[in-house]
Image (cartoon, rainbow, N blue to C red):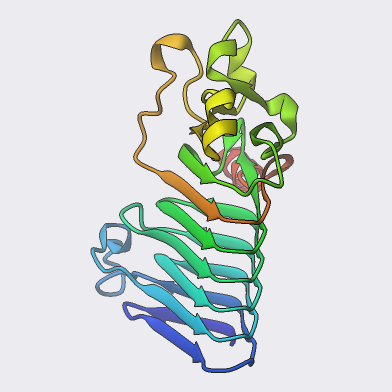
Length: 239
């Protein structure tokens, strides 16, 4: 599917065997109740892109939706420039063996990724001085890696016991790494307040990742600022 826009309805796609599913430049979201009403941002509908695949791959490129749900058995899942709008919903990806790759992720709600044998890679761009996704995280990872290797670059992360002056430049706070190494579960926050008094994230968003034998890498991409263009346009409009 290419260059498709739907409003106030779901989009459901099913592949029963090995056929790939590809969506590019697709929008599925709430709209204004009538032309000129300008009430779409208060819409209570939840327009879902719902994808079920067997052994085929799933690729989404430049997709905007209130919510996204993907289920696949063995196919890889590649998501690029995804924007999820509804803060009360989120993105769910479930696969048995396939790798999951999400580049330039922007999400208003929760993100849940579960795979038994696949690797998980997520790239989060910046929105000016903060990550475009912020909230708490809980990552269950395989024994093929150490918890300190999950977030990249390492210079953007710190443990909760290392909070000190200048911490505002660290985007990721990880909880006890020793406990994570023994349990295989790493918790913490992304993009939240980093001082000692407010280290716990006040936001409802959650990033949940689970893989039994795969590797997990979450990259905070400081070089990509998705809000820079809109800010420049606003400044130009004001002059």
